[in-house]
Length: 325
Image 1 (cartoon, helix red, strand yellow):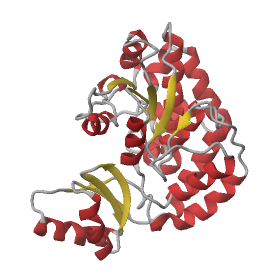
Image 2 (cartoon, one colour; image 1 turned 90 degrees about the horizontal axis):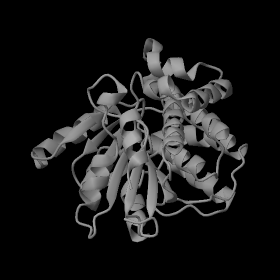
Image 3 (cartoon, helix red, strand yellow; image 1 turned 60 degrees about the vertical axis):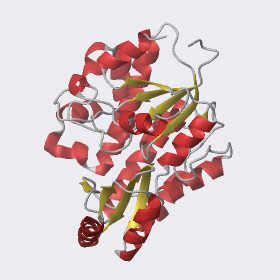
Image 4 (spheres, one colour; image 1 turned 30 degrees about the vertical axis):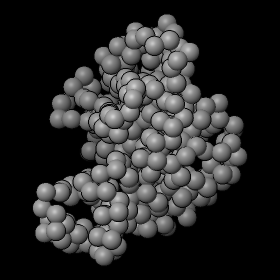
């Protein structure tokens, strides 16, 4: 595929893709990665590399730390990729899942890395402090999930795939929802997620109200790429106030990832490149697998031609992505 035919989209995962040791492989071999981590440490006032690699007291899983940890890793992966590639891919579009939307805005030069760090640190702090509840991923579509969620006072938190809907609510409400779902749809699953609250639901309204003040203090500039909005599922407008309002609403509305993927496909995106994070039971960076790969491939499996996909989440995959054509 020639550069003229490629319409590249850079994507960034959200919470759940953090792990102890994240970024350690990059910092060991690349001064540019160490510089990204040092920059994050200077902005936030704590040692980002130590937090990421050693995870003292399990802090990496606290939302206030998880979000800046992932943002830093996203940008470090992108930095190392651009250093290694003779001809780095030039994206037309950038997108991120929840927290990852901030990395997409940094990639598009709409938001500085420093300001993004301050924002996600405050966002994570507020979500952890004022958020309540839990989350569960249901293997059913939105039309089926919504009345069930409503009945049990749960909110729709995310649309990951046409047949995967995330909901949030109190632990007791989610238990009741799962019990009814098991009775009505025994072949379907309700998988509880490890989060500090029912993110992207009405449980986050107070956090969003306080986060609005942080958004007001930050300068956004015209993006050099198209950036997808989790709130609308479409592209952000160039207007800074519009971007801020969508990031505000994103906190207590569903992550419309299905909408983002569909918009990207309608726009002709034919190569997805995922930067940062990692999931799986393996301990080190080399043993992790990409967070968004399965969702992207499942969503695009019937497209003709089917888009290509590249991971760039650790040293091995970044090197492979840097040498691909």
